[in-house]
Amino acid sequence: MAGGAPLPPLPMNCPKCGKTLNPNRHDQMVFDGQVWCDRCHRYDERLLKLRPFLDLETWAQRLCRAFAQDPVHLRHDPDYLPDPKKYWDGATFLLGEAFHEPRDIMLHPPGLQLMSLCHELAHLFTGQDHTETWARTYAALIAWVKARL
Image 1 (cartoon, rainbow, N blue to C red):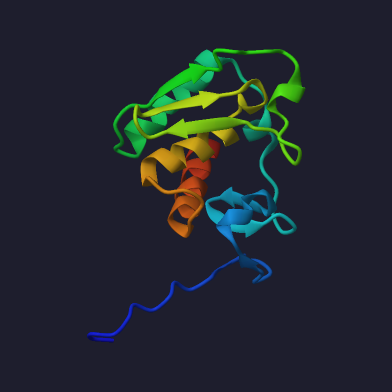
Image 2: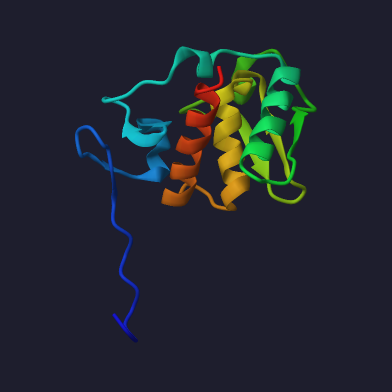
């Protein structure tokens, strides 16, 4: 439409059941090649397994190279406490945080898993919060990792 307002983006839908998906409700979605609702698809358990920090650093390096991204620095929570209540926000566990400047990710103890790493990398790779572009990037990262496990 020349000169008019841009059209709103089409909604994302689960490829199996057609349910409309909202990236802000990513806790109800599964990102694996495509973006699915959590009733139609599940994560491979290997993506949810807690891993050593050094293993996740290696995966981060591999993902950055594979997706033609500048390196990302992973760091530990400086106030690490083994008490998981520290990471509970009343509704869910805080697994990790992405920081655009500097370009790094802090993974908290409950988030030392490939799924959390890919979630945070998608934020850095897209520069976006929970948007459709972020969701599709997250799904692509998960698929890449899963194919190499």
